[in-house]
Length: 160
Length: 171
Image 1: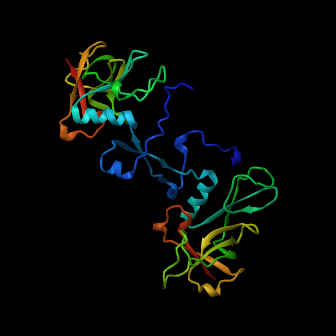
Image 2 (image 1 turned 90 degrees about the vertical axis):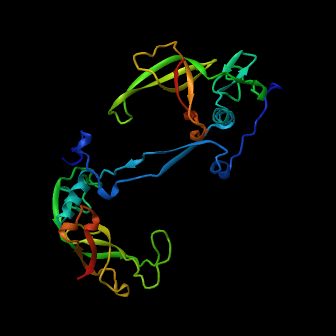
Image 3 (image 1 turned 30 degrees about the horizontal axis):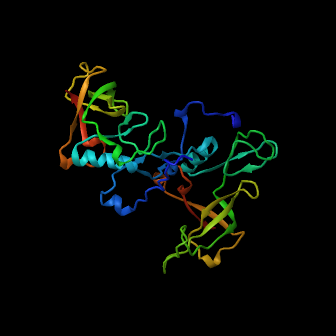
């Protein structure tokens, strides 16, 4: 007893009732100069843009403001329309919700390679047994009225 | 430094840019729920308050009866596991007459001033007191050394909190 008494199982923890509460913590993320322009093109023109560094011959998707390899500033003239098609670089079949409960229908989340970049997105119109690495997919955009200027303006990627 | 390198200087955004939808944002909130663990001694203290009793611990070496109870004596550095019930009467050690709220706003006209006090509980060692509020008393009549007694909430309303005592009133 005394100081030798220890709580060794967290389920034994007792807490002071009025001491239960929550801190309000909110955050707001902006995509930055290049990200903003990338999402504007996605929302307004249904186009996926990248930026190409001529020195490194690399096309970044989503578009970046500078080249990560040579630190070259990427200008307006370096913006390139990379189309709306890509290749599954990797994918995961998600059977559980964020809370850890079983989903009725599994979700497919994939890393989709477009030019030299990767977009993480959902796969749709596709059974989880049908997906494979190297599969060609195309972006399915939401109706224009539903777009908010974010990666979810693309509803999902579907097989070509 | 390379001539190609330009300093962008950053891009300032205003609240208006975001509210008008000109700048796209992702908003989220984190779940920051917390619970404060009372520890072993205060847990028993609160459980006893719910029963309408005040409990303290005694150091077997220096014989101090400590309130609120603690599991070790900070003077002797030894564990304390002797529990003692103390009375619900005591003496005002110090007090304050507050004409402002906790956020420093002035009390409204006709509103009674808040009367926090440190009360040395009978049965606990000298100087062992708990902070509480005074009630059923004219602020002008409060004196240091005044005898007071706890006014408890009805048993059904008690939650295991220091507020299970509504206030202390003069004896």
